[in-house]
Amino acid sequence: MISLCARSPFSFNHPLSNSCTMSEDIPAIRRSLKIKAGSAKRLFKEHNLYRQEATDQQAKLDKFKANNAEEWDIKNATRMLEESNKMIVDSASRLGKAVADLRDVLVSAKKIPELAEDEELMKAEEALEEASV
Image 1 (cartoon, rainbow, N blue to C red):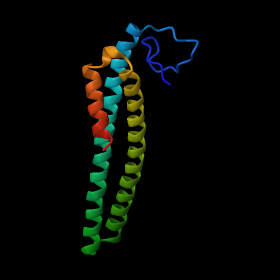
Image 2: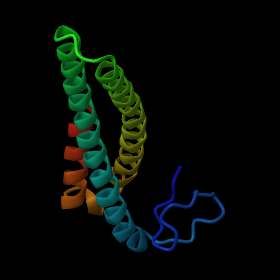
Image 3: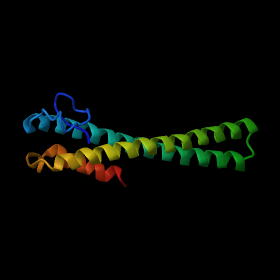
């Protein structure tokens, strides 16, 4: 489990090293929610852009093939499509990790009564819902 202590927001929690008080944790949790929600949104947008780029590249390749374009154009369009497909896999992997991290922070934050109606918590839940689609 990740500790969200203000002194070390990304350190691992150890049962003997829980020296942070609840009031110190709340700003760190809000900050972590905001960062992780922003990251998930950005990666979701990036993933969709790569998917659109691959669709566009496929259409371009099909057009080249239909018009009997030069071999270099077809080869180049194929290479571009392959690169787009690699980026889709990479961005999906990074998005999955970001969503998992955001979900972990949300689960931790929901256990704190002071954050039950917090604006950053609500925004993070929306980001998680959007990025999980």
